[in-house]
Amino acid sequence: MHTEKGCLFVVATPIGNLEDISLRALNTLKSVDLIVAEDTRHSKKLLAHFNINTPLSAYHDYSKPAVTEKIIRRLTEGNNIALISDAGTPLISDPGYRLVSIAHEQGVRVRPLPGPCALICALCVAGLPSDRFLFTGYLPAKPCARKKEIEQMAESTYTWIFYETPHRIVHSLADLVHTMGPARKITIARELTKHFETVLSGTAEEIYSRVSETPEQQKGEFVVLVAGKEKEKPAVTLQAEQMMKTLMSELSLKQASSVAAKLTGIQKRELYNLGLKLNLQS
Ligand code: SAM
Image (cartoon, rainbow, N blue to C red; front, side, top):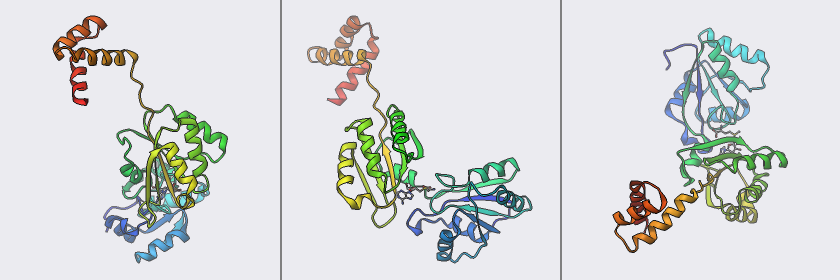
């Protein structure tokens, strides 16, 4: 039960497996005065499953301003309202941005109730670098715009994540192979938390072949993750590496770094550390 009044709760709901709903989400959905959802018919099923009888009304980012105003008025009058989407976290390729933004303008407190989100679930199991990533929602539907976006992302060194639909997945994978090259590492995460959950990792070419040749792999909901472009080593580093390898086969690490420093002008300490790294790798 919430003691505070006039709060907008942004509540994440499952992306497949209903057991993923949190206790806090259930308690909040039961106790608020109103739930606003992008598709009330869809959300009714979820709420019925958990025996939640809270009044429900529709909200979309393209709802008429009067709809948003009414929700904000109820909040400022002290009603607690929960925002949910069809699945996952509201505002993530889902409605809610306008409502949250206006709530801020009107001094309404907005609180998050974290939970399932397809892009985060996919990132956790993709086996790709997760320290820096970019999420861009759905790829554009038109081939030209889609190719342009892939071209732009080809240079990024961050893991790139996007959502894709079943009827476009093969085309997008083909464009990835074409634009980023067959060897770029990618992962596709399909039907996460559901019966046919599949996570495929490999080169762009391998994944394209697998998906295009297997109709079952084209069904359901997809998250696509693309490894960032590998930073090219500067030529001087490659040259120093080669030199250290050769010298270290004849001399001690200390002597090798001293000779290499004289030949390359790179600091002895830097070359010594490089030698240590090369020793560890061999
Ligand atoms: N708000 C949601 C979230 O938090 O992830 C995303 C909503 S967006 C309208 C729906 C898209 O998310 C799907 O087309 C698919 O790309 C991705 N998605 C949602 N559920 C998924 C799942 N169980 N497995 C894989 N992708 C999923």
